[in-house]
Image 1 (cartoon, helix red, strand yellow):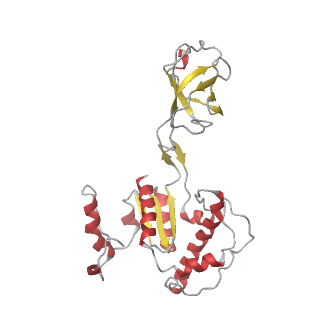
Image 2 (cartoon, helix red, strand yellow):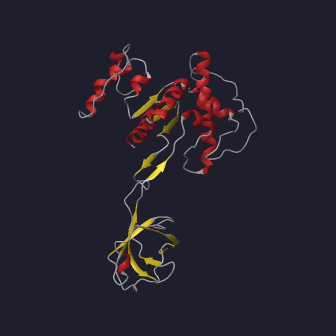
Image 3 (cartoon, rainbow, N blue to C red):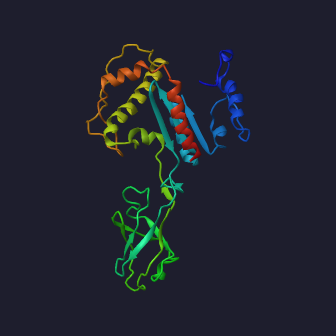
Length: 298
């Protein structure tokens, strides 16, 4: 924990960290709460983030936050593995789903037809398709087919890297020259499951499908470590020998991105996770903490 010094030994970590955290931004009020995380205390927050929290506490507070519409985040690390869970409620609106500026392209030609076909020029930095099927676009500066200028956003169908299908243009004036076709970003509404459901049917975000089996194994390993601490009152000792992890009960089936992760846990991975279970790594905590902070800002 980067904010603590040897002189802080024996003190409450929240109180010992409060002053250094408050100095990071004088416009943010940082207070230390050392009492129980009661429902009365949590009800006043918009976002609740739990770290190093027992699974039972995660479930209790997760259910309360979901019912009250409070955004709920769990961030945890075990050795070199990290876990981040987000529940932003059943109707969370993402204002900028593309996470970037809307794209625009210079129009070269627009056909008269049903549907009309827009031919545009790629940009210097464009790689592949600028637009995607279903994108909403508007037109400006078009000469000739001026009916498109200022029209409500229309959906597109991508034909190739430089052509789009749009709505019926057969009754419009012939296209002469000029114009911009611009993407319009529409807010998207997302629905999140509470933790109690997500544990059984996790939607795990992975960079590539090949990473999913390992992520599912880590998902099960975190629950196994919670069960170990619940039964023995502590996490496994560092590098202590452990028995191979048993396969989950029930019929095995291949893991799916939006389904249940039901696959035997590799013994080697389980031993590695248990062996490092009581050794949180500060660098891993910093990475997971940064991701959790981004989710809290969202």
